[in-house]
Length: 382
Image (tube, rainbow, N blue to C red):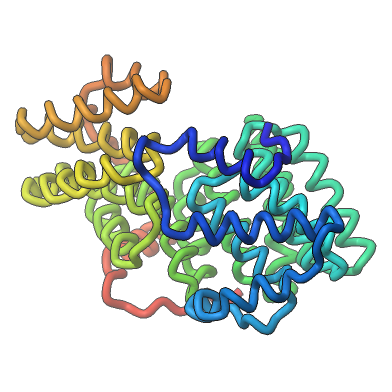
């Protein structure tokens, strides 16, 4: 569990999990914001506006009006911390910000973030309790968005517990409400949950349909598009549609995503390319992964993607690449205790590709992914 810590202690805990020598130029800014929020939450200082005003240029570059309510800007910062893997610092800042929030919508969004940080740390009970609090807050303030976020969050908790009937129930409820209120971003996440539930039930046609609708509902948000498209591309690769999967992975990379999306997209690209006998692409993707291995703050993502590249190298009989990727991935798995990856690196060898038969409606979306690159995405009309 990520217990709320003093910001400096939280930062130290996060840095201890980073590869040696890796830092981020935004760290000092995040520490300053965390300290200011912490002090304000403790009643020691209330001039958050001054802190945020000092970041006016940085906020403007990210589409945030520096003149907005300071806590809205702090929320953006918390999510940036989370994106960079500073989960302890994000949790501490989130707890402090919640003490200051007097606008129900902002307070609710902060609850949702804290719940997400809890389940990412493996604390499902705390996450479930927070989502329950969020649902009650939504009802009290008559804010549909908060109820939808609570339903989605409870669906994620159900997924992590393997309760897919509950996942479907929660996600369908969230989807209906999100579409009714025109909240495309939340509809995208609900479709994503339904895609995962469909995969668990081996209904791959429905999975593809929900994956595509998750992607199209994310139109206009490059980061969200990349996230949804990565999931869909991984599904397409798994069910034997390497051409569409390759196009999807490349479209993810075209959106210049953060490492948590870029690394699995590179690994997926290598895996799909080998099925299409695109040997040069396997090598290109692998070189990019090996370059990232020394700078990324996400060792699990690097090791997992290198596992995919290793398997691809074995299939094209490139022993040099296979040895390099296996060595780096094994080192990361041993250093960080990634036992599942250690087992797979020791035992796994390339498998024959399976091809799943899909319904015609799902095949249309497969074709859509194959011809996606270079097109402007238009939001799905619900």
